[in-house]
Length: 182
Image 1 (spheres, rainbow, N blue to C red):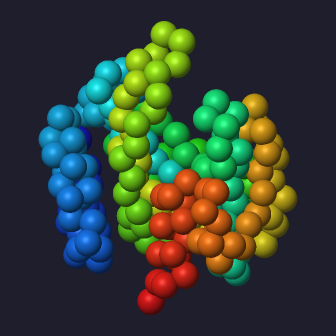
Image 2 (image 1 turned 180 degrees about the vertical axis):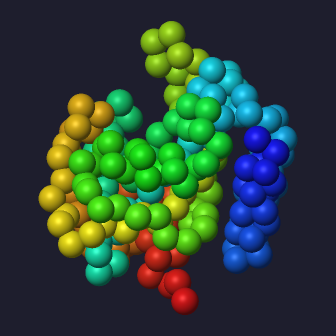
């Protein structure tokens, strides 16, 4: 546990160095990390860590989005850590489960951070997701499978995602980061 927590802390510090304009967001994540392993469990009532994938095509020109069944929005694949302290592994697992794509691989360190409120539903109160996002690259075979969590999946040009004001702001932010990466 200790070495993983330090590793996450160091990854957040490196993210802050790359994206100094996002220092306040990094501070929120670093503070939440101090809550310990319970912050990686969905039973942590106030919120919990999640891992997501900015799932790009082999050539990097497109991103695979899913139309989330519960939230009724186009989003990136991702989900709950469920006790796994390795959020890159969570992002990769969720990308595989939600798209059916084989041959996926995580590239680099944290790509994006997003803290967002999940609205109350049925017996589940509203809570925060501390979403840590990683670049996941598809292999040559880009055939996907729609699973029960989604209405649809679609490959979209990254430039089109960046320009589409109807999409979630964090998707557009990730598209801009991808387009302007060194």
